[in-house]
Length: 268
Image (cartoon, rainbow, N blue to C red; front, side, top):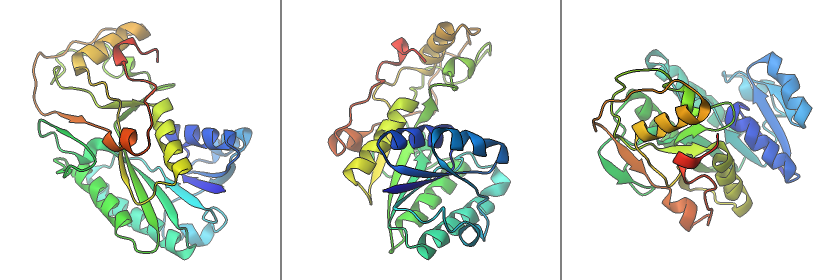
């Protein structure tokens, strides 16, 4: 089995290493020449790819795979919305050109609006930000394709090695929405969820990837800062826009048990 990972960044690189440990051949892409050697060092077949109109034509070997995992940055500047969707369509064209039958698209829980409710994979996302609306459009483009099956994975905020949450708000004052619950996932579980999808061949699905533990922003980030030795932040004692994202299908369909499910005692 050969898996190509479009975007071997913080998550994609960790996923690639896990796949390699299972004996899977992994091709990985980066947009930076300086990162190519880092991919080679762990056994990833490296590719330098910019997602433009010629991505497929100029990199045919990369798209020769059994499964494509798309991990492109989810944060989109307002003026780049049209360019982002064009990139998505360029990826779709390459998938069809090389007849890839299985795709995993890494999305985010940002597609769910902060409606003051608990949501799961069966909920109507109702995004309330421009970024969320664009990401949902990207999901729908993948899901509407007749020639291949895409599984959408909506991750909460990603934390773990190199992304210690204690530094996110370190030393800041009067931070809004201190009572709002967090929706986060540790890197070890993000990789674990996708590995479970690959091993079980669960394609044509939507999965949320969030820890079942949802402490308040104030409690979580204050505790993380203290644990990491960062300056303690100060939050406003208020509850504004919020949501709790439940990963119902991860437990029910994948039968995956989160390894990090107690944030206040987590060692990052």
